[in-house]
Amino acid sequence: MTMGIKRRNPLLALLLLAAAQTSLAGPLRDKLQELRGERHNAETHVLRDLAYGSDPLQRLDVYLPDNPEHAPLLLMVHGGAWRIGDKGAAAVVDNKVKRWLPKGFIFVSINYRLLPDTAPQQQAEDVARALAFAQQQAASWGGDSSKIILLGHSAGAHLVSLLAADPARAQAFGAKAWLGTVALDSAALDVEQIMRRPHARFYDQAFGKSAEDWVAASPLKQLKKTATPLLIVCSSQRNDSCPPARGFVEQAQRLGIRAQLRPEDRSHQAINQELGLANDYTQAIEVFLAGLDSQVAQRLGIDPLIDTH
Image (cartoon, rainbow, N blue to C red):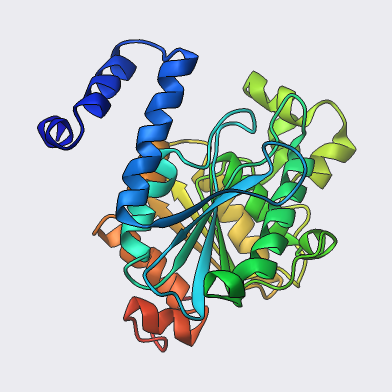
């Protein structure tokens, strides 16, 4: 792997080595990100840093397949404990782009405002704004605004689940209906329960001390019958992931919402990074996506009549 990188770009190899050995200083980190962007551009057409709001973090990248026409869109929300993370991170983008652009999908990866300046509920509003912007711009990218699917990992999974549980929250910021939502390993589906029990300190930093705010930030407590179809992926290697995910899915199903649980024997990181690789996990996600729309199914080469419930 390293030898292949070295032959293609010796400077990138040197920077990757430095990154592995030290924390990157500003100029070195910026150069690495620049080279990473050149790598993506060599493989596909990318529209970078499109503004969906006035804040510098309210930006998104659009990865376009060759000659897109009425393409479905996957909109990805990164994780990072509501405090860190970046739309261009390799684990967020690379395998997903390699998998789904050749199948004719547009892939959108967003940034959003972060703690300590912006609380999770307002971060969810940023996701809603990004979704509305993508719907408005989809046709100009060769996409179909009616065929958008939200994906999120970790904190990003919490944010997309919050919008999916009550789509009116997104509609208040101009978003229209979307096909469905895939939440990748969020342990924060019942924030109120987390906060009433012993918990990690970073939850206090995210959700504060108000019980009213805990309820408002809990996807479980916000579930409405209007919720989008949902696939909840949880890591069976974690004690705090699958139990709340199971409770969330069961409550959604009682409300008549189409919801599925997918336990994965993978780490929290691998659930994000390995999505898009040729494995049973990626195929299971695609079966769910195919069940959302016949044209999505056609792009994936999956029979839409397969039972995806």
